[in-house]
Length: 313
Image 1 (cartoon, rainbow, N blue to C red):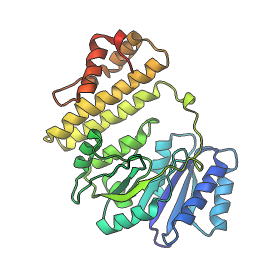
Image 2: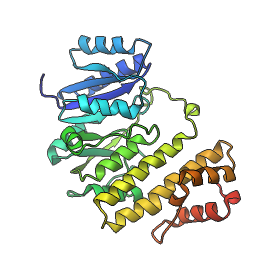
Image 3: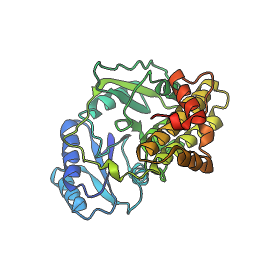
């Protein structure tokens, strides 16, 4: 097999035309890069597999389809990492596509010898990240929590050997927030970080439509579970980094936990029922604050703790 620059890992289910469109889009946008398309099919029954294979063969591309059964998207992504052979990997989520970013990411990765590359999403006014040479993974995690650096977790590039060498995997039992948790977890292994100087733009036309109403309420706790794991990894690897640990414990975790509260309230659950559920699961202890907690978040925490009936999402 030819040396592969980037493995493009695409999880899909019953998205025949969209998957074919993604393959065409990436092959056209990235002339000059040797791409490998890894389609992870999760029990499609609409011809996705046949059409993807036919298109890869028709266009003379490198790639194949892997049947991963009815597991979760994170499990499919882990399979893709394991089976990939590219120098770099990128993950393509059919429901959240971005336009023409891979060439810039690859060039930046090669220039900086980076393990992890990202860019700021397009915004008005434009958001420019300040990522100095030598910024560590923990520095970037702190900046993300502070919102002084922004990224979309669905448009990143990793050096494959960085992921496999450190055993970095998606949390397979997490169906909500898995991309965010994966990135925060990877930052705990101190990748060489680079920010591509572009504003990435969503491709709404090419993206699949997702029905948010099908997301069950309990899934919000999976995002919290995942971030708790990130926090525990940080405690194990950086026990003396008081800034990082404080931000995770008293800003990121309570923010995610209150996000669960907000979602449940919006779906009609009562505050007392939510409090009981979170207490049983042991999540209530993460709704806490310190002197470092931002004022607005601190006020939300205090209101939820003392006056839950007056709490507003």
